[in-house]
Image (cartoon, rainbow, N blue to C red; front, side):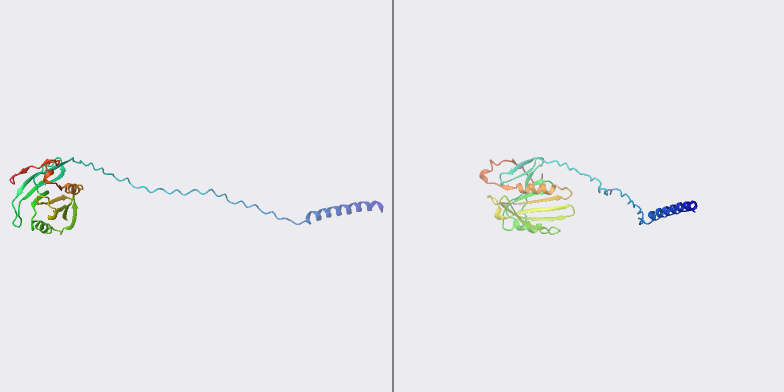
Length: 230
């Protein structure tokens, strides 16, 4: 009895040992393995490049203008002076009196072909008004303004038709010089010449009267007097 019991006891002990091991290894809670999620790597934002708007280079036009030197001219009998370009050949001639005028009338040709003229006349009651009436007939009807230059008050007329601008300055009788002469300056400027009108206006703005006592000392070249036939 004793000999066969010993193996049985040994078998029982081994059985108990293995059962205990299995229970201890499986009795604890099982922690599930959480897979590691790898976020996709985002490349750093590349700044948007906006192409700058470009424009075709514009052509620059350089205007080279030949500016003439001015010279003083005067008429010691009619008592006026003004400045004109040195190359201008200015002359004065006497006109036949119009039917509605009195006294002497002279025309100074600043630019030929009646482009720019200066009329000097003995102030009378009707002559200055006759000039105004003449210029008011321009077509289109001229713009009328009043302007004073060197103490001479003018009625100014301006009319543009096509490529021509006509301008007239009629001095009022109250602005006549000490010998009773009044003046009318008239020019026609070509609008295709961007400088011509302004140049003519500068010449008008240089016009002035002087007294008989200062005629001999007044600076300027004397304007030659010619016959109307020349």
